[in-house]
Image 1: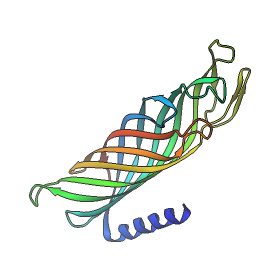
Image 2: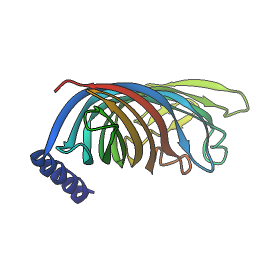
Image 3: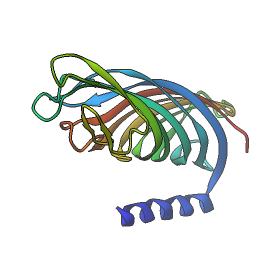
Image 4: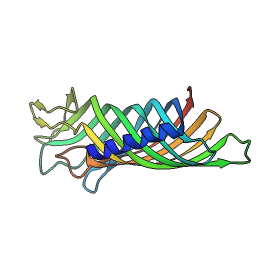
Length: 219
């Protein structure tokens, strides 16, 4: 993992020497959920906002690199999956996270040589770190539903009805996307799929999200 990250940073540094570097702001949202065969999850709304740092070829078309740092607000609503392990029947959670993408793409000029419109198809990976979050656990220890507030979804917590095991704080996955640019404005669409389980105890549940963002380059 460390070698991969160092390799990606090296490529970005080399790109910065031979490319046009742009820094911008980006904000948007979408839906997120769980990829799993044994966990039911209803989709939830998510938000993403942050700073993008992009390395473009000096020519009108060619290879580009993208990174940055983002604030992500997302949630998981999981149920019907814990009857053989615990009395928890449903988890409703919201999380605040920081995210760093490492994307590579190909820039295609749209129109004639004087056109400032471009289309980009890209792919790469993302690293996500949970900061904090809150939620609700629904218990059925004796056949009756009881709700308990979770003060921090990333930490273990004891309740009268049993034990809540915290979510995994870190996530790593693949991301595919496309982008339309005109002058210094851009529209991005991306789909992400995690490689790591969001929770070590609750099935093979991994993150997925579909996000649309708008942005503008400032530098």
